[in-house]
Structure formats: structure tokens, C-alpha cells
Amino acid sequence: MDTAHSPWQPPLIWRAAQLLARALVGLLARLEVTGDVPAHLRRGPLVLAANHISPFDPVVMAAACQTRGVAPRIMATAGLFRAPVIGAAMRNAGHIRVDRGTRAVHRALDAAATAVAGGSVILIYPEGRIGLDPGMWPERGKTGAARLALACAAPVIPVAQWGAHEVLPYRAPRGMLRGIARALWRRPVIRVHFGAPLDLGEVSAASPGAARRATDRIIDALTDTLAPLRPDEPDRPRHVDPGRPSDPSRTHRRRRE
Image (cartoon, helix red, strand yellow):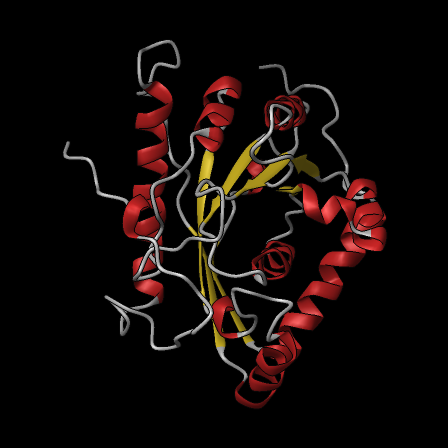
């Protein structure tokens, strides 16, 4: 992949939004960011693969990436792009619309591959939804993140986060004001850790089942990166959201080597 040309430059609106996100997270919680993104990867090409636990996750990730000098283009659900103000901001910031459950979903992967090839950093949630694993561990992933990384020969960095679920409930905007009031009072700790770059070079993109094997490696790495962030909550989270459903059907089971 030719990366000699100038990489994509994040628009000013996105840089400003990251600063705003950092201020908002600082108001509602105590943000602790550990790990780092190697300097030579901060402007891409790079895929950031994050676990998804709350509607507040994109704000947390924007803030955490800002602390590390990274301005990723986010693959986000189409609903955000249809919102009157947020949608325009998302488009102007260079984020990528994902029309889940439609044929157009493949366009998002093509757009992301073009972006990565052009030197961008892409942030993707490989689970494909807010996870519903009973223990809130990363659930079995969709293959989009792996296919993107394999197609572009781009490195993947697992980014684990914990605590955003204590700010906004699963069913937000329902219960949002109560969640925000609770966060303002208690100011929960939100931890984000940038893991080591994941080498998918051993997975041949042309081999049968490559995307599935690479996806499982990404979810394994996410799980390993998340574990130190919740040492006193190894099985179930302390904070229980009564509106959050439980779906064990996509529980991730580590592949045996």
C-alpha cells in the first residue's frame, strides 16, 4: 500500500469536537487513559478496534483519542447521520455512515478501505452493536473490522474502555437525564487503554475463513486489553442498568490455538 502521499487531514470541526468531548467527559466522569498509539501510526493508516458498552462510547473515544493526538474517522450508525445537526457535523468531520441491515452496508466498508488506503485512522466497533453479553465482555464480532484490516494490510490496535455504561443507560435518550445527574454526583471513573498493535500478518486474506479467524483474534485482544481495566468486576459489572437486555447468544469463546 502506497502511503507516500499526504494523509487525510482531520477538519477543524472534528478537532474542536474532540476538545469538546474531552471537556464533557471531564465534567461527567474521571477519565483515565493508558497505553499509547505509536507516533508513526497516529496519522494512519490504522484501524482502532474498540469494545462497545454504552451510547456514551463515541464521546469517550473522541476524548481518549484526543489525549493521544489521534483524530480517527468513526464508522457510525446511519441514524446519527440522519439527525438534523449531528448528521451534518458527522459528514463534515469525515466520519463514515454505516447502514446496518441493508445492502448499502457494504458501501461503508468500501469507503473505510479507501480512507485507510489514503492514510486515515478508522475507529470501528467490531461487535457491530452495543454488546449484550451478560458480563459485558466483548461479544462475538462481526467480520467488518477484520476484512478492512486484511484488505488494506493495516495494523489494528485494540482499544478497551470501561465505565461509560455508568454515564448513559442502554436505552438513552430514555433515562438520559437520570444517568447524567447520577454521573454528575458520583463522577465514575472511565478507563481507556490503547493496547499493543495486533499483527494479522499470519492470516492470509485469501484463505477460507480468514475474516472469521482475524475477527476472533481482534476480539481476543480486546478481551485481554479490557481485563486489567475491571479487575474487581471479573464476572458481572457492579453497575446494573435495568433497561439493558441480556443476550448470551453471541458470547465470545476464545479459539484454542
